[in-house]
Length: 534
Image (tube, rainbow, N blue to C red; front, top):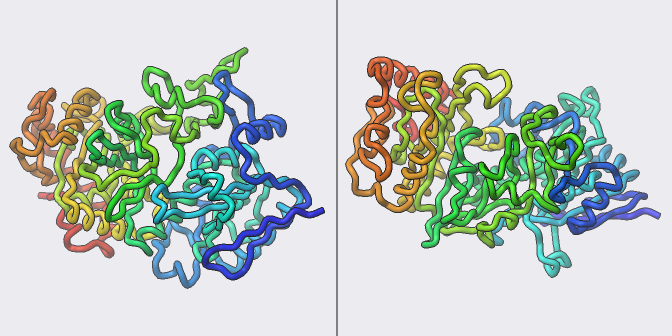
């Protein structure tokens, strides 16, 4: 006897149909999914009750194997290139049919969920998984409908994820046997050949990064967000190693979300229902909220046990440095429910500048904010990534280039319009080096950074004196409670002032060089935010 799973998309007259002669499990609770995962030998239980699972060959996303279908909807709107690689629509249809035939002989775990805590802008999802732990991942990471909502649930977007299914590059049009393909017209994502669960999460993020700005004038953002007791929302942008998770986690403020958000004319809302945090070298002392969230219902990926125990050894990177955990956001005690805040009052761009040039805190005008939003700068240092032995400049447009289907200037323009309309303060925070570059200077004290962010949030920097940075043009505050004044001006912390000037000029040139790829799309207003090169 065949089981049939049907779904009708809101923009399609046809029914998408998956038939299987095996079992179909619909919207199982976490306990049942954990049981299936254990019985199918997909994972093991840890000492805290979390499920440990491996992602196999791929321990991270595979950017060169991620595609967007090229058709009438996308050909003139998508930012085509190395990030958004076009895929033939006919090849997509054929691959979809091959996957459905493959699934007809598999047990299926099906989940209805949604993305977007603001019910006016949510995206209903239906996910088909061949792995039980993947379905648990989707339960944790996406938002969970109430029981009464499931009766009339109509999906807007479908994910089919079958790690066991491998493509034939010669006939299917893929680059290799693994793939993640977004079809924005058919409103589907096909994922095969990889068990890295993050492909599902980031696939939907990419979808929202197209739909919300392009169709609704809502800014989608790769950021964390929290809210104070007075309802003041703050947003934190930052690449890996900048302190985004640490600085947005504040016992005096409630967490809206840690990774993906939308900014409407009246709110900031989380896209997700969970957190997908890195756990390499995790300790309770460093990250108590994440540590305590790793319990029954949580997933830990690619970790290993301490010998002779079920205790996770978070220092063990024999599988990958990209070890992670996925848990529902309500596992964080001070998370906000629902995950929605008011219009932001303060936005922080975090950078770990290993060259010791960027001030520890600066206030940006609209042009500078758009320019640095597009630039998405930080620097990686030894120990943060395999093969990095000296400071390495890193630019990632809008602090999330890998997930942007549209040209970065479109997000930046929308960012600037919202910043101006709502009179939002934008701050650039350097959590990196002072007194010299990496190897000579020292890392900015976390206590100083927290003091500066606290002062900005409390409005205590509104009436202090400011001085313009000679190269980047930022407004640099000349005093801040609990921070020595000399620290606020990076040139003053260098013993060799001429060496600082040369380093600042060199960094400015790197910014200008990186920005050349965006100049054809950038407005005059954005270009005004460029550093000044003598």
